[in-house]
Length: 47
Image 1: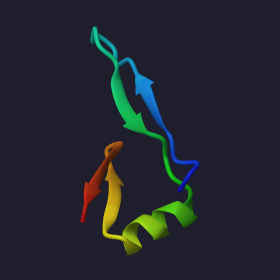
Image 2 (image 1 turned 120 degrees about the horizontal axis):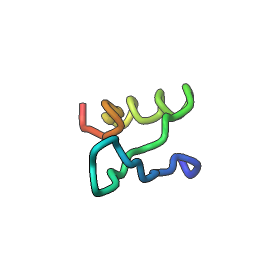
Image 3 (image 1 turned 120 degrees about the vertical axis):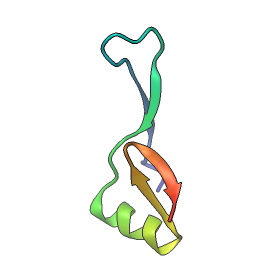
């Protein structure tokens, strides 16, 4: 999980950047689900 980083994205027409999580690997996704978390739309959310 140490390699799961966040990044800033500038969306078209927006003045401020939005922080989003990078896409996790398959192994990272399984680990997060085991702990009750998932990434939906670039946001870490509790399942």
